[in-house]
Image 1 (cartoon, rainbow, N blue to C red):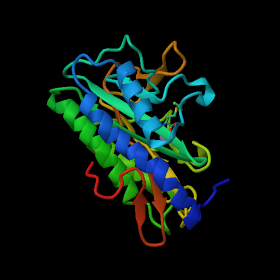
Image 2 (tube, rainbow, N blue to C red; image 1 turned 180 degrees about the vertical axis):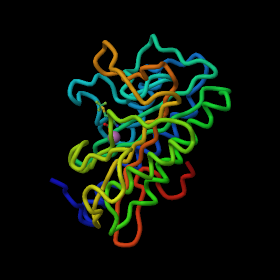
Image 3 (cartoon, protein in one colour; image 1 turned 120 degrees about the vertical axis):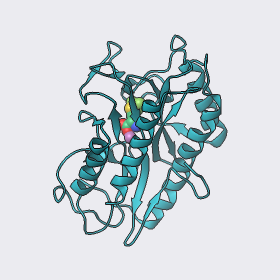
Image 4 (cartoon, rainbow, N blue to C red; image 1 turned 90 degrees about the vertical axis):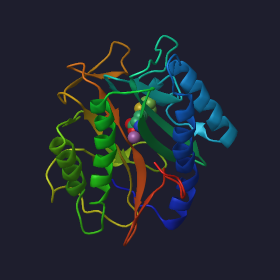
Amino acid sequence: MVKLKSEADIDAMRYPNKIVGEVLEYVKDYIRDGVTTYDLDRIIEEFFARKGVIPAFKNYEGYPAASCISPNEVVVHGIPSKKVILKNGDIVSIDVGTIHDGWYGDGARTYAVGEIDEKKRKLIEVTRGSFFAGISQFKVGNRLGDISNAVQTFVEQNGFSIVRDYVGHGIGRTLHEDPQVPNFGKSGRGIPLMEGLVLAIEPMVNMGDWKVRVLDDKWGVVTLDGSPSAHYENTVVLYKKEVEILTIPEGMNV
Ligand code: MF3
Ligand code: CO
């Protein structure tokens, strides 16, 4: 069941989502050669504590950390670890969720560690671009499949592949609500997009093949071919004539 949000619901969702946007900017300054993904998770959790929000991922189905930090061939759900040391030339995806007053926020970015090669730079930019290709179809009168198809088309036209095993989702008083938001599929299919719909749209894009597997830690998802992968996610609201990206607060350039 899809739960459309009222103006008051959306008002309540602004804060947890604004903090998601802010922490993803804040943590960027700490990403450098030699930092561990554990260090980055500590920095994120401390930021959340100062801002009065709860890390939504911690204890979610037993997940052990405040953030998912996924370097290189790790697609999503990388568990932060003192053993994972970032190095110059890596890319790293950071995914965070928050709860405030019972309402959820969710977002992700992929960043460069130091200097990265041109192809990784393009992977990050295409992943971000595919989100914006998707949101250009987030309109009353369109259907969910229009978003999915726009994301997939943009990614594939740029020579990369879209992950199929993990999808975006509705979000509100829980982290994952209906509908599921695939990043691939046919336009003109799926539920009609309506005013008050709040989605986390989150393309995961591989440099090589789209196939993935889960690591022995039961969380980390990696590309089957070992190629690098990027992730970009925002929580977005649909109004009658416009959209609002809750995880890119006003005045923020990302
Ligand atoms: N942002 C991801 C999602 O939307 C990560 C959640 S997995 C968790 O599904 F276990 F860490 F919460
Ligand atoms: Co999500």
